[in-house]
Image (tube, rainbow over all chains, first blue to last red; front, side, top):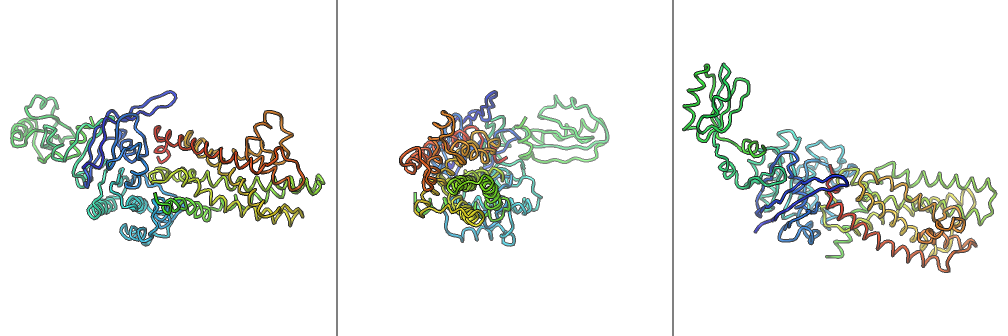
Amino acid sequence: MDAVKCDDVWMIYRSLFSKKVALKGVNLRIPKGEIFGLLGPNGAGKTTLVSIMATLLRQTRGKVEVLGMDSVRDAKEIRKRINIASGNPNLIWSLTVYENLRYYAMLYGIRDRRIVEDLIRDFELEEFRKVEFNKLSTGNKQKLILARAFINDPELVFLDEPTKGLDPPIARRLREKIVAMQRDRGTTVVLTTHYMSEAEMLCKKIAFINHGEIVAEGTKEDLKKMLKMRDKITIEIDAEIPEQKFQSFEGVFMVEKDGNSYTFYVDSVEKRLWDIAKEVANHGRIKNVVVREIDLEDVFNELAK
Amino acid sequence: MSLRSEVYKTLGFTYRNFIITKRNFFTIFETLFWPVIGLISVGLMGVYLELNEERFAFILIGAVTLSVLQVSQLDVAYVLLFDIWSKSVRYTFATPISAWNMILGAWFFGIFRGLIAFSILFIAGEALFRVNILIPIPWLLLFLLGVFLSAMIIGVITCSLLLIFGYRAEIFAWTLSAIFMLICGIYYPVSMLPEPMRAFSYAIPLTHFLEFYRSFYGFETSFENPLLIGYLISLLALVVLVALYLWAFERARRRGTITQFSE
């Protein structure tokens, strides 16, 4: 069963003098019990789509089903069973860690204070329990935002760029927390992120959104296969080569130049490496060659064009 | 829907407003400083004008009511403003709360603050100006409940305007009560107002609650049962205004105002 089903979802922001189309007929299925990635460049429509699924926004057209319920008609019922955390860590400033969690627990009708205590422990916030939100470090604020997102033991959680702007070690700890919470509780997680490595590490399935449309969807392998290019060859040379030299080369889809380093996106390294290296060697002395499979970042860059 | 769960959700807002008030010097100032300053300045004016006891009571009732109303209506408006200022609106609206949970929860704390303000002003009026504005307790409580209902009305209007117009509307949290005061005859009888304004003043429940209180000091009322009329208008207004609030919320959901508040 799907946790979320979006059918022909449109979102048009209207004001007195302007109109902005944020989503253009989005169709999407998010399976239950997985971490699902929603990727896309800035302004692609990720946050709008997540906000619609979390019932904070109402789509202009189309149908959204969350946990089998209609997002417009059953919004309140849905809210009992979902939660959300955003990369802009903002909770009530003058409430402490404990008070913020207790307050939100109350809004979910939860009386059991052990739930608050467990989350404080699970997210390693014990020593900050009496610290006001505005006095916490960004990392601890984000931990608290994530802890809050699990307060009602939700079946579905939307994490909108949860590690944005965090130091790598803290971001890594939070990713581990997300995985642990998802694994222990069987929660479906919808994750939007700018960090491809994060999506690659956490998500089983991924959808790419750009200009308000889902442009690709599937597992990481599916997405890589969607693009004909499979490998990239980076060659460092002590001379300049005209880029157009390689445009007619069979199996070369793209060439990127960075100083005297050239990256060739090809269909198969086995088939193309020899010809490319031979041509490059005609222009100068090869200093270094690196060969690797394309990653999600490359897929993202290609789809974001 | 369990009643216990709904009560808990409602008390969540009471809890939050209580903690924020406790920590915020500004909100403590609102409860204590301005009401006392208002009472003293109006009281001194009464002394200067050599008002008799009834007229002195008339204006002191106005000053006390103004302060109680302002303090308690702010709490209802704060239910949304605290979230707007903290940019946490999306987290509150992502929870399974209803408009009533928000409004009632904040209102309960508004009543608490309003009662503190009333008690201080009552004691100050007696101590500084020897004017006793105490009426039989059951009637006093009914009057105060009327004022608190008026506070809820103003607070709900402010919240609705915030959802419709965004940040720009926060000014209404401090100005709406002043506009109400002008029309409902806070320091003068509404019979003094020009005709169209007077007709409008009768549609405001606070006009009737004030007339009810002042009737204990021998002042005439515009209608025979001002308390009942005040309550009926209040309840009608609340039904209409909560509907307005729900409409404003749905409009905010369609237009993206809720997510904009959190950015």
